[in-house]
Amino acid sequence: MKNTVRIVDKGETFHFKQFAIHQSSQVMKVGTDAVLLGAWAHHPAPTQILDIGTGCGVIGLMLAQRYPHARVTGIDIEQASIELAQKNFSNSPFKDRMTGVLSPLQAFKKEGGLYDLIVSNPPFFTGGAITDQGGRDIMRHTIKLSHNELLRSVRTLLSASGAFAVVLPLLEGLRLIELAGMYNLHADQQVLVRSLADKKVERLLIRFRPEPGKLEEKELVIQNSTASHDYTPEYISLTRAFYLNMPND
Image: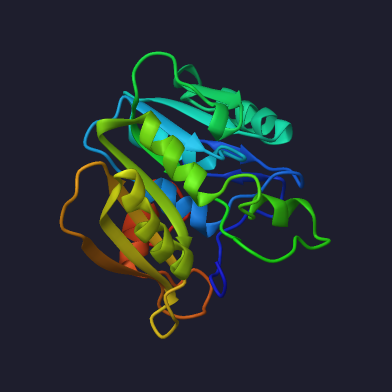
């Protein structure tokens, strides 16, 4: 997230409290958006969780930690991502409950029941050209997964009592909320995320449900100041179970 200080490792492995993420230059690395979504996305008692565009697997692993009775499936269209995610799953304490699947979402079909919780840190560039930076831009562009395709697929995979959670930039998030109604998905919770209190809202965390309801809106500020690790109590509370060496640990 722009202007957000991230807690990062200096090496190729990002260590959390209960698991580690091996990283690669070919796959999107651990970032604030993914950690926010993994820490916030929620359902009362999910038994089946789907992580769309799993990348290195960090969101799926966070959810496996949070929900010890859930099976987690991470899907991705990139071979490098699935290989890396599967490696991270296999090295975790949750390996018996985690699976990586190489598949485009549009072709993915679940055997058996539907998912109680679906999460995605989806592509969000909806226009313009893909630059020479290559892989990172392609990962963040909707050319391979439009938001219409995302919502259509989620609606077919989500249980009647399920929840779908995403993180997106503000404008893209507001557009997704409008678009979701066409697929009978209704936003019931959203969190407006600011890196600092005096900054503009930069991200939206949104939860959708199949049944319409009143939208609950909250705000989250990540840091009190630009000083390293000067995090707000709300952000510390949200992420303390995952990050190493958080204040007040």
